[in-house]
Image 1 (cartoon, helix red, strand yellow):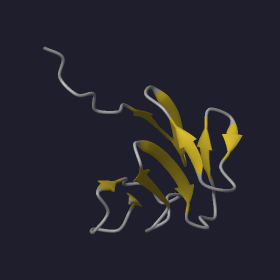
Image 2 (cartoon, rainbow, N blue to C red):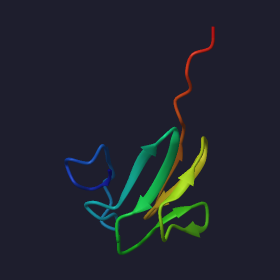
Image 3 (tube, rainbow, N blue to C red):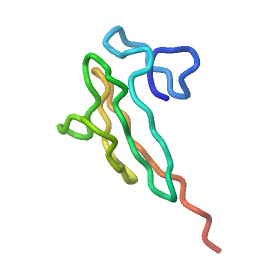
Length: 78
């Protein structure tokens, strides 16, 4: 969960960010970003997220005036 709520895994301190703004989920090795009906929207680059969308490493996510870079954990190589 991303938002202003104290229970959010990623807490953002901005009045234009909803308490429960967006969610990142994992499903069978794929990562998805979903807007949670926020007033100001969630964006990948300049594209507004209107339905869950798959994201990959180094995806630029904008929530309100804040930019986040998504980086997926990679398994260690031996």
